[in-house]
Length: 183
Image 1 (cartoon, helix red, strand yellow):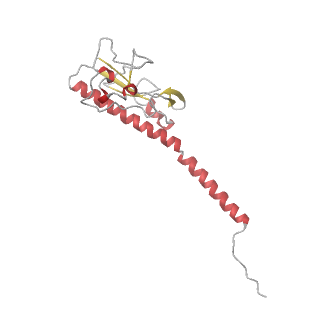
Image 2 (tube, rainbow, N blue to C red; image 1 turned 180 degrees about the vertical axis):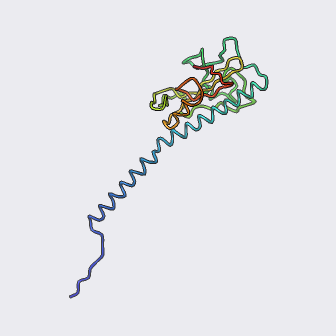
């Protein structure tokens, strides 16, 4: 009688293939790091929003609108009303009419807000550290000069925080004429 041999994988071969697929899947997940991709995406929005807010400030100044006050500040969040204003606190107002105490309805439909608005989240302080911080945007104007601050979450954006030309290693700063009006 002739023996018919069937071709099939052995259990050991199957286990080896499953192990290799598992190692590749773990390596792929680690290299993609979806949490870091989300942090980078939120950081990109923050930088874009800082540019939008800067454009509004430039337009206000160019249109001759008085953006300064006697004490050098306008508005402010509950945490520090004497030194800054939080765009995050104006999100529900129509056309952002009271952002920094200015009527900006001709320039914005709404004030951009931090993607993690008013939540405590990790943010980059320097090239090597992160700390828990409140997620808001800050802005201050003084005698026609302005500074807008946004936080960054991703460690890969630490160089943007420390290399923006500003005076803070905790905020990404956009400001006018090389002057920093916020600390």
